[in-house]
Structures are given as structure tokens and as C-alpha cells.
Image (tube, rainbow, N blue to C red):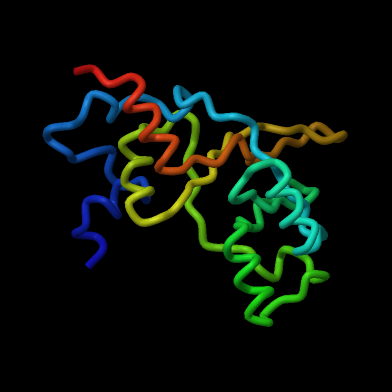
Length: 165
């Protein structure tokens, strides 16, 4: 069962960490990765335009976020091209037709150890920041803002640059 899997428990926030011989970077916060601001696509962007934007900007993937701030999923260059070439989507279709809606989120305050557990199964994680917002009548609500997208390469680069030999 997944409840007996420590990595699943860490990834889903039920355990902080259980690794006895943690590497030096295990407890460092995600915010120390100094991620660049992400490229965000709105849901009405076409597959054709998404491919052009990703190629022009040099990105492999981008979060798709509604105007309300709701994270709808992740569009990747390879999945978009594969879907269009296989005939499952048209170049004119909105990117929502080809997004991954199963993705992991991680906070800036979470540890690189937790991120490491996520990246064992996922190609990326969306870094989010909870922000309190107030509307005109004074009522407040929490909104998740996309702060970045982190990949195994980002973690590996951080660890190799800062390796404490």
C-alpha cells in the first residue's frame, strides 16, 4: 500500500522526512533554488501558438493558468507535438486539450528532500506560493500563485554547484 511507502508519505505531506543519512541539501528550502519566473499560458492559447512560444522562449513546458489564477495543468512541447501529430488534437485547438492535469505542487518553504521525492516519479513540480487576497467587501481568500517550475535538472544543478565535498 502507498501508506507504507515513505516516499509517497513525504510527497503527500504526511511525513516530514525519514531518510536517516540525509545528503547535506535535504533540508534546504526550495526557494534557495533561485528559479526564474515561469512562462504562463492562458487556457485559450492554441496548440500552434503554444509550440511557437515554447520554442521561441526556449522552454520545454509551461503551466496553464486561468485568469482567476487556478492552475489547470501543464503543457509540454513533446506532448503537444505528439498529440497533434497523432491526430488527437489540432493546431487550432486550445492547449487545454493537451495539458497534463495530474501534476505535483510544492511550496517555496518545502524542503529539497520533499522535492527530490516528487521528482523520482514526476518530470517536474509546479512551485506555488499561497497568498492572501482581499476583495472589495473586505473578505479574504487564499490564492495560489505559480512561482516557478522545477525539474530534476534544476535540483541537480543546485546540488552540483554547491556540493559540500
